[in-house]
Length: 254
Image (cartoon, rainbow, N blue to C red; front, side):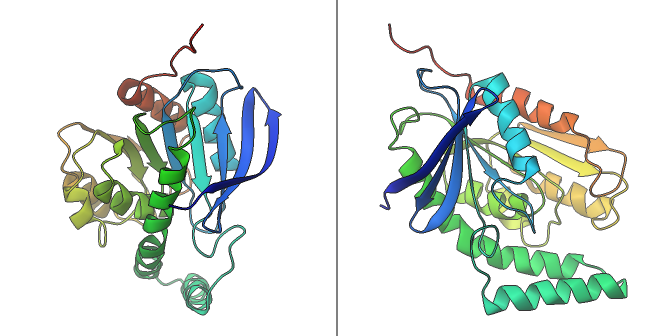
């Protein structure tokens, strides 16, 4: 097991932010103020081209910490944030930009590249979760959720399918091509978001991925709008989802 190394700490907006590294993979852990009791953990996966502290990640973390009392952890995906790109990363990104400039479908490239990233990221996430659960404020027995859209779904679906510690998950905005098989192995509660007018992911594709999940407790959230127009209130819904399925922070002993 890799040890967790904390490299920086700060506090703002009523939550504590700690930078860390596990096996050389950089991450950030947002937590309630010190002195709070043991709390559930939510792992978050960032989108493609972003990083662990992108506005979407810090904004969702603030909601999860403030409204649910959760700990929230994000790591940089391979080739993102503070992690260097490989030659394979550079080729795939160049091909994506070429297709975009030519007006060609991006989906086949994104699906292929995200599947490659997931193969690398899932073991890193499992090692990170091992390390996080050694912290007394999280613990080995505490409930764990996962929240990731776009590339965060591409990584989170195979992660959730293979790690029984994750007991609830929020996914969305992805194609089913590489994810339908692992989705069928997921039986924990699921909330799934899609955009009805998504210019990249056809409605039938998004619905096919939702339908593939093996869970008996899954909810589909459909909003009008294009791929990047997912309403902000879906983040609030995710908080309520995790409160229902993970509980809240416990009260510290007197």
